[in-house]
Amino acid sequence: MRSHMTSASIGLLLSLCVAPAAAEPLSGHEIKDRIGGELVRLSTPYGVTLPLFYRDDGVVSGDLSGFSVGALLAPREEGRWWVKDDLLCQKWPTWYDGRTHCFAITSLGSGKIAWTRDDGLSGTAVMGR
Image (tube, rainbow, N blue to C red; front, side, top):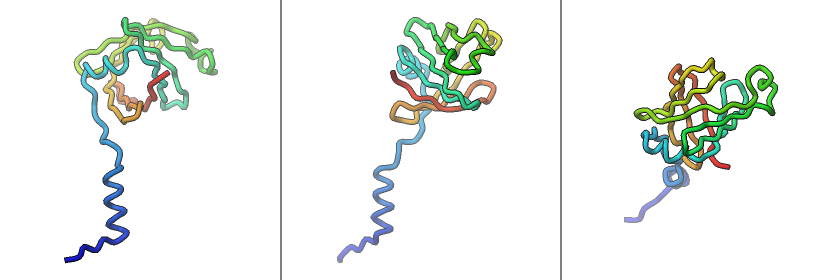
């Protein structure tokens, strides 16, 4: 019996073969491995991309000096980051009023992650220098 594949069938088959991997929540160990030592360009819901450098020693540094919003906050600041359970937590001396926030991190593949903060705020980020 001869098989007949329509162009629609071929298109469906190809789309299944090249479909992006499903988003995967990262475990605490995976967060530490992926974030530590990385520059993370955080896309915020406010339209600003915030560059954050997560050092392996638990220090996170941010620099808003190139943005007009930097005049409203300390333009540069260093805080602390750590992993608690399967969340990335961070605390800044003055940013966010010094409150601790924790984030669920989901891998979107190819150096991109999605983040959801403990208060529901969410966005994406690109990792790499």
